[in-house]
Picture (cartoon, rainbow, N blue to C red):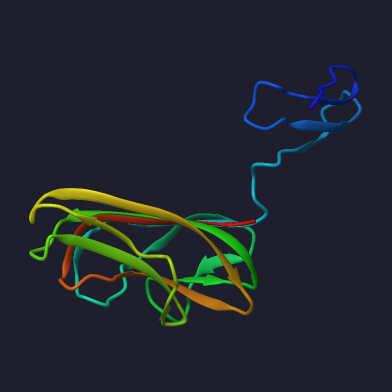
Length: 166
């Protein structure tokens, strides 16, 4: 992709993706950055604690943009998604339980999302981190939960979810 340095249209080629400036060379230019999603939400759990098998790992909205991704008002610690397509990255830091496997997954409206399980197997009591990124299509307003998909209660130190509309 060629970048122009004249007034009118130009881009900054030393960025991950070009940033195009449309308009005249004034302070009122419109900047188009293809990396910033239309809507996103970043959710965190920095309190940690013990999460029983099958239970939600509660997260709280930390930062957002737009109205497609919000904190759930019906399920404590969950996320609400409006119809659309999303890239979802989630991370959990915790202690390996007695079974030797820390396992988390996503649920939408109470049903596990196929292919969303992220697991790590190590010696019990080790501190580990697990993460995964998936793309999810949502046809109607949906409740998204990060939960303990393992066979033992989990002790976590933190967790987060980044949801970006794509």
